[in-house]
Amino acid sequence: MLTTNPPDPARPSPDTPSAGTSAAGHQPGPSTAAVHAGEARQKPGYSLTDPIFASSTYTFSDTQSIIDFIEQKQVREEYGRYGNPGERVVEDKLAALEGGEQAVLFASGMAALVGLLMAHVSAGDEIVFFDECYHRSREFCRKHLTRFGVGFREVKTCDYAAMEAAITPRTKFLVSESPTNPHLSVVDIEQFADIGRRRGVRTLIDATLCTPYNLKPLAAGVDFVLHSATKYLGGHNDLLAGTVIGSAELMEPVRNLRGIMGGVNSPHNAYLLGRGLKTLALRMERHNANGLAVAGFLERHPRVERVLYPGLESHPYHQIAARTMRGCGGLVTFFLKDADWRKTANVIDAVRIPRIGPSLGGVESLIEQPLVMSYWNYTPAERAAFRIPDNMIRMACGIEDADDLMADLAQALDRA
Ligand SMILES: *Cc1c(COP(=O)(O)O)cnc(C)c1O
Image (cartoon, rainbow, N blue to C red; front, side):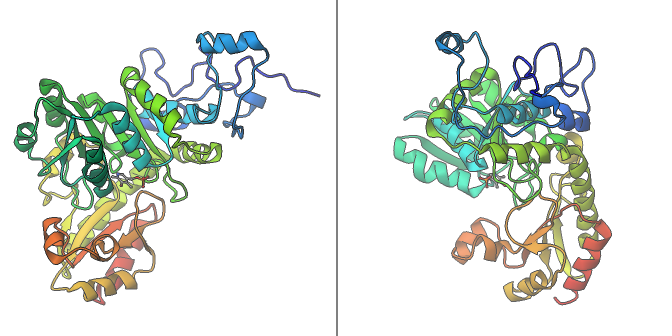
C-alpha cells in the first residue's frame, strides 16, 4: 500500500508549529529549542525524525508549477546548490537557537566567513579585526580580499578605543571572535555592537567558542553571528560545516552568493549536523562543567604556572564572562612551570584520554601544544607577537567524566 504524502512534505506548515519555535507568550528553553526548533510536527512518511533528501535536483509537476515557484507563490526547492529540505530544517533550527531571522549553512566555518564577506564588501571598503580572531579568517582578508581592493586593519583585542579609531568612512565591517582562541579573551559584546551601531558599520562575531547556549550576540545588537559548526554545534568531531545568522534582509545576498559559489553541504552532512544539534544544550552543560573543573584543577597544580579560563576569577575577562555568559565552554589553555618545548611535549605525549590533535568542541577531549600544532614554522619573534610561548598547552575538554580527565592530567603532569 502506498503512503500518502502530506501536501508540502519538507517544510513546516503554519498549522503545525514546532514546539521549539516561539509559541505564543512562552520562549522555549535551550534544550527544547535544540530538540524541536525548525522542525515540522508532521514529517514525510510519518517519520519522527527528519529524512535525508538525497536528491541533487527537484522536479515540477508541470510548467505552471515552475512559474508559480519563480513567482514565489510556492515555497520549495529547485536545485541542490540553492537548498535542500533537510538543510532548511537545520538552518531554521540554527536561526531559532541563535534568536536570528535567518541562518545560511556552508560547507565549513571558513566557507561561511568567505561567503558572508564576499556578499557584503566591495573594492574600496575596509574591514577592522580584533587581532586574536581565527588566523585563517584574518589571512583571508589580509592576503586575499586585499587583492580585490578591500582594506584590512587589525587592532588589539578588546581595545575598543583602538577599534573605533581604526574606523574610516570606508569601513564596512568590525570583526571579532569571543571568546578568542587560545587566549580566551572575552569581548564586551554590547560595547562592540554599540561601536558598530553608532558609526554605521556592520558587526560580526565569530561565536564558535561560546555557542548560542553560552551567549547570544544578536540579542546584544551584533549584526551577524558566525559559527564553525565543525566544533560544538556538530559536536562529535565527525563533520565540517559553518553558518552565518542574521536578519533576513542582510542574509539574502549571502544566500544568493552561496548559490553561485557553491560551498554547500551534502544532504547527509546536514543531517548529521541536525542530529548533533539535538543534544547541544546537554553537551554544553558538560563542556562548561568540565572546562571549569579542569581549569580549577590545573590552577591548583604545582607544575602549572598559569591557566587561562574565563570562568576562573584569575582571568582578566572573568567579570565580563560572568556578566554575559552562561558558561565558558570546554577550552582551557595553560602554561607549564619551568618547561621548555620538549618537556611540554612530554606532558602532551603522556595523556591517555584526550587525543592529540587540532580542533575542539566535540565529545572527545583533544589536546595540543600550539607551538607545534600551529606555529612550528614561525620565528620566535612572530610567536612572541602572537603570544604563543613554548610551554603553552591547549586542552579542549570533551564530555568525559571530569574526574577521569583530572586524574589523567595529574599522571601526565608528573612526567614534567
Ligand atoms: C575552526 C574555526 C573556524 C574555521 O571553521 P572550519 O569549520 O574549520 O572551516 C573559524 N573560527 C573559529 C573560532 C574556529 O575555531
